[in-house]
Length: 118
Image (cartoon, rainbow, N blue to C red; front, side, top):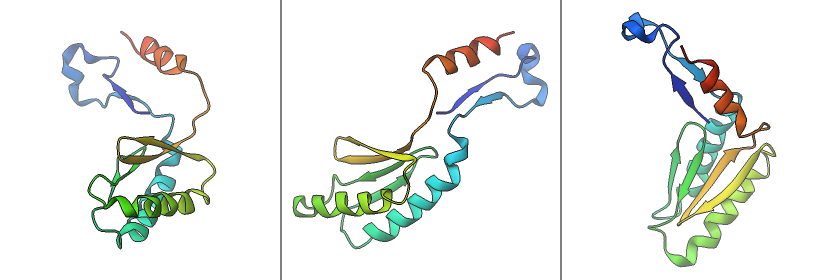
């Protein structure tokens, strides 16, 4: 979701030039921020719940939440996600992650990296 490389003239330590960026999900940043704020508000009443904004992804951690409240957290996340059809829900170890659905192929980042070489 976020690849940063050196500028094309990196031989002289970039000379203050900004590196090149490949961020196919940058259009989702305002949406991710909205979802983050909504989830912080919806989960603040659940002890142990933690919501984290990871720039291109929102993580809802429930590791420290009483097992009886796990369903409540999942329900709150789904209720917010229903308003954002361009985002998808994935699950990890005691974490729910909301990510953008990006059209494209896995080759695009490789093509980007290859095209920025000196």
